[in-house]
Length: 430
Ligand SMILES: Cc1cc2nc3c(=O)[nH]c(=O)nc-3n(C[C@H](O)[C@H](O)[C@H](O)COP(=O)(O)O)c2cc1C
Ligand code: SF4
Image (cartoon, rainbow, N blue to C red; front, side, top):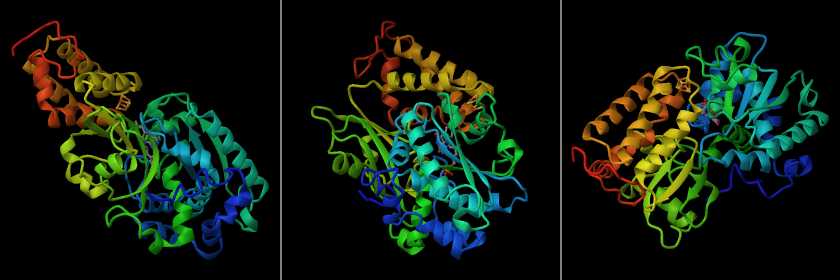
């Protein structure tokens, strides 16, 4: 475990500007404002190799460059604090523990891309965090870090806080933009991407809370110092939210390159007494489910890519053997069915059909053809859905069918290992 991005969380009064500044706070902004130009800042972020922590893992520096290259009088920076991925609660730790650090990251981002207005889009379920943010913004306006002529320079930047109303899809950047504009939260077709055409049709940079919290650290300490953390392909640290059947659940900051085994057995103190590991879901409900045999997998973008999986939001759910995999998948798909915005057919219909098919199997009426049907529907959803919600919804299904195929076959034969499913239909086409 390390203490780089989260170093002040729980250590200082989150709303004391004095304490934040005593701990290197606003050193990064001062350097950016007084010693660097937009190109310098972007090139430093690019060379830090920082990748977005919101799930898509896109290069932050490149995204900043695309936004800065657009010619427009109005540009926006949005901090994505929607944190709707089930099992993910790491942004909350930063929002509540060091709001100034996130806002400092936003001011630097705005300076780099040439934006004068910012929004923090925070999920409605975090009312306390929203109040903290509003207090922090007011303090910074009063102290000259936000508003007109920041720290006496020509540069002006202001931030407003907007909150969501509980829709998971509003974490997707274009649905989030629609929501800020006052429209129903539904994803847009991409391209154009937000850096070209985002909020009110203007160039818009959308970054995750944790991504932005990295910025002041990179600029204050320098890239060389930052690169001492992590691996070659995945520089820095990652906040992970661990839940499920482990002794110590919670948010931990780890260096990239840490293995899943180290997370579960060293950091989280192992499995709860009497519980046996069944699988690990990595990246929230839209993430892959991995078996015991992959415990030595490193949390590193390249290593995970080799397995065709992503780190997503950094949620790690540890599931024990009392849980039936098919029942778990049915619950997961119910979540996506509920959250689908309905704009495109593969996602709107696909989730429903997967649930119907698994329901049939878990009631004992499944056939081998149903297993093929599940693969076909998942493939169509992955390849043809309009946004990441539908594309990633069947990931848990696809990976459990890959790593735990025998569980599906057993159910079709009328046997549920965990004893959860009531297989009244008996053996059909066994
Ligand atoms: C369905 C869906 C939900 C998402 N939810 C979030 C979220 O809650 N927070 C977040 O930062 N990114 C979320 N994303 C990713 C965003 O679309 C976007 O990639 C991210 O905010 C960009 O920031 P980053 O480059 O700093 O990671 C979501 C994506 C999808 C498809
Ligand atoms: S994939 Fe799902 S959430 Fe995304 S646009 Fe299509 S229906 Fe809406």
